[in-house]
Length: 275
Image 1 (cartoon, rainbow, N blue to C red):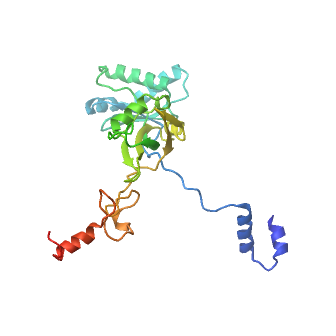
Image 2 (cartoon, helix red, strand yellow):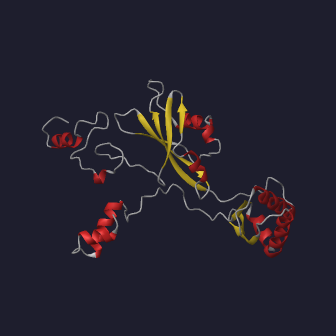
């Protein structure tokens, strides 16, 4: 149904109300869908980072203008469309700013030039790399206990699982996996993992919504928000909210999740029962 037909059926309605009816009929919504911020914002991708000592970095940037010209000549000789704009020193080495994202051949050519110009050993200059960001993922479907025993899953178990699964071949962990039990009475976990990634999140996109086997169990990878420090309430001992916003009156026991600790403390303070 278009706007003209609605106006013919309801001539007394204002244009604002007619537009509202049109949106309800078409199912459109002005509110944007929530977006997962799964990648951190780090240095711009059109940069090349070469870690080295401060002395070597200062020595190299003394004549930055000539180095820019020479590197551009070297890149032109391999028929590259990438060229260097400027070079600056950093507390961890030097940063070379380019007009395009550098390829592996560009990095190799720049590394060769830098090492030859500084006459430095291979150990003193690290290979050039592009800036990296962190992406945040979570794995669901993995049980808390291994093989129905009292042995619970550890971060080392998760590292072993990721290392031996082909969908994680290009994935490098940025930190130790974080294992969180869904609830006190549940035997399932959520595994939070931080991975090194490009700023566009290319590595994360390769594995999100993919399933893989952990023995006879099927686990799934999902995207997660940045820094998913999931709070645990110290009042009801449930995950997902902090103690200050808990709606349950009185604290529950962390072991049985039933008895009220505050009530017991109050009774003991009133000396109604021996302490």
